Amino acid sequence: MEGVHTMSGRADQQPSADNTAPPVIQTTPAQLLRPVLVGSSPTHCRCTDCQTTLHEGQQVGLYAYRLADADHWDIARVFCRDCTPERFVGPTLGAAELLVTGTLETVSFPRTQSHRLCVVDVLTRVVSPPTEGSQA
Image (cartoon, rainbow, N blue to C red; front, side, top):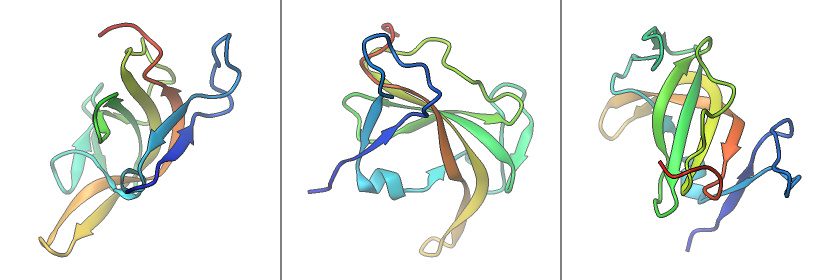
């Protein structure tokens, strides 16, 4: 059985009135160690907002979510440095949501002799646990 690890939000995040500790998101070791792949192209992806082409070595922002009953995170939006939001427009009840920043790098898959863009040096900016927000 895989262990469960926790990941908390940043200290400067706005806590709720009832809880002064940052929210905690649970994840498995496999999820923590899996590269965060972005885009379908091995050489570039595009900012969701302004459509700027992003390449290896550039700083990006990501919006990711995981539904309460899901076993993986979905990367829903990739942002250039200028378009990365600083907060959620409205958290979604029943989904853990993250805003993170990181750097685009290339990961190689020797078995398939292919490569893809991934995000490394991930820094969590904002966390919304599944118990906050309104129905989508």
